[in-house]
Image 1 (cartoon, helix red, strand yellow):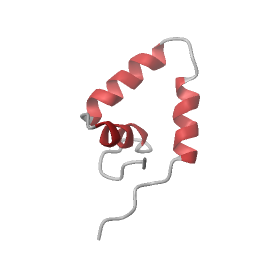
Image 2: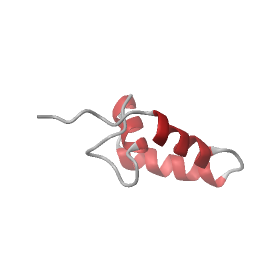
Image 3: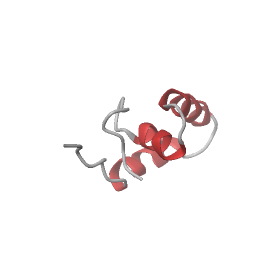
Image 4: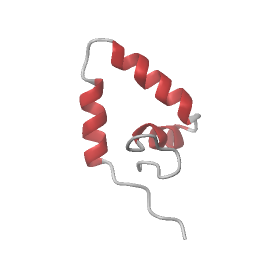
Length: 60
């Protein structure tokens, strides 16, 4: 899995998840936002993925 270069708004985490699962990036962002409203560490998970998941290689 990679963070998306094409479908990014902040760090490309949701875009990368969308690419991996074959879903529209907007749907993944909306689901992530809804899940973040419930108690739990979703924002922490996002930051950890931002740090640990490598960015998508450049396409030449």
